[in-house]
Length: 172
Image 1 (cartoon, rainbow, N blue to C red):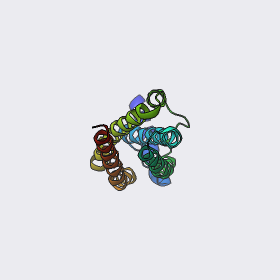
Image 2 (image 1 turned 135 degrees about the horizontal axis):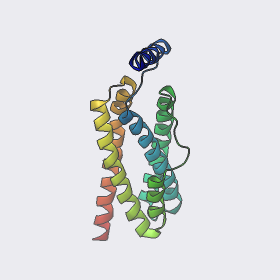
Image 3 (image 1 turned 135 degrees about the vertical axis):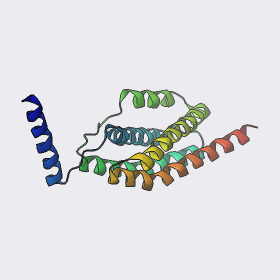
Image 4 (image 1 turned 30 degrees about the vertical axis):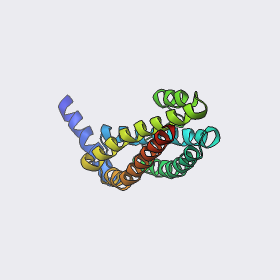
């Protein structure tokens, strides 16, 4: 009897999802969307901080670019989350807040160095997540979002790495 009821509930839920056009996404896809949102919020906030408190002109320019690009990306991920009925946090979670606080605690050239390192780490990690979703996502909208966004994330990493090299050359 219990199996029959469970089967009926399962069939009703699947029918409901089909009729409303909703498709359940995997927990990995939901986690990806939430992580992109959190990472984007952190990059925007740190970018604003860099624009205001960065020591070098190049770090200020990097911050400005990341604020612009990640603000647009955050809007895209919010639309995707809304379509998938995923509730996104309005504030940074503990991990991202800790990352922000660590970098924001520096000043002058030290801030620039910490900011650049944090952006390298964040973008490297993000690239791995985007590559995984571009390859493995079952939901076509999540997959397309990952494929479409991956080149921008790679471009950001390249720009940050170039800035790091330039900063190192200036030290020598």
